[in-house]
Image 1 (cartoon, rainbow, N blue to C red):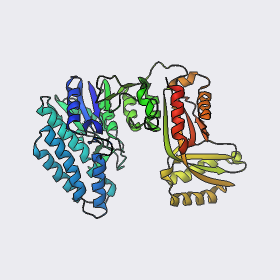
Image 2: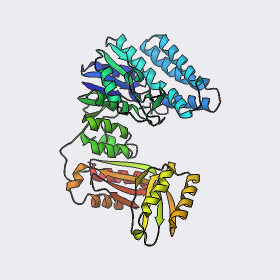
Image 3: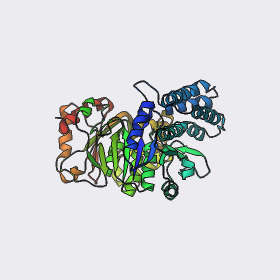
Image 4: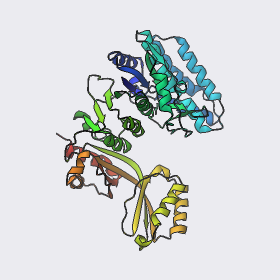
Length: 454
Ligand code: ASP
């Protein structure tokens, strides 16, 4: 059997939902359908999840959220009318949204999650109704009834492992197509919690793992995963997409800036060894990208180049640092106390640079961290630099080849891009290059032409 997940653009309006119906109907193996909230219908449009977050924030700020709530209801009303569904569905949405906006606000994160999950809930209710009305018997299943148990980390919850058996017991016997809302579940104390943004991918992977699906199909709006981010290099969409990649490659690429698939969604599929097939709702005949436990790697081949801006580098220098046992551990301890999660840590003999996402280091945190480093470690010099970007060349084939790094560096130097850092782990699956954010676009374009251009 197959679990299929449809992203926001695939359920953005009635016409898209009808495409989803045809895709599901065309293959009897497609038994479980996970949906996101309606996304953008065109450039400049709103995602329902963003509208819901705006509602929750109005309420949290003590303002009247009625106008923001009306925009959500209108969005569903237009889908309902175009699909010819029962008016009671939109009435139920209005009622539930109003009730959640009136609920207890003492925990703002839990309050916001309960409101923003309504996008997925009603997307799934609408799809189940539309499928059934058109002759494909389908049922909506609530994550609470299915036993989708999550941690209490509102806005970025994680699955509790006992969920797998419960989900399997609940969903496996259902004879109809199951339509399941992505993005959220419930904590052990019964409160709704969501995954991080884009988390419907995670729901799909969890259901595929729980049901031991033959494949997890992730339908989005691109024909395949492109080897570089097409937002930085539009010409990539005209070239070949990646046909096959391994789980490890996908994890590296999606972690470092590939917007196609949520990086946390790879793990459930890896554990259960379920292939992921990324496909296009608008061109369902395209084979898409297969993500597999293993593939025959091509020596020397870089399979994709991920890229992401928004990093900062904390540089600490101390004469004879190499002889001071525990120096780096203390530095990391200071950062851990501030809950700063670290990307990489290139080091020299007497210096160490710690790189992390800059959003974790507002001025107040920076001042505290600097004061603690000064007091605990007495460095000779320290500084913090914003505006760093990373390029990550990923490919299993690099392991068996000499010279990939040289190849990347040569292409970057020809494009006039200055390299600030290089980092390669012993897995040899990826090499990270730190550059200035302003150089990101020309660097990605240069590498695309070098490795994937015609
Ligand atoms: N609707 C949620 C978001 O916009 C989750 C998802 O689409 O996967 O982040």
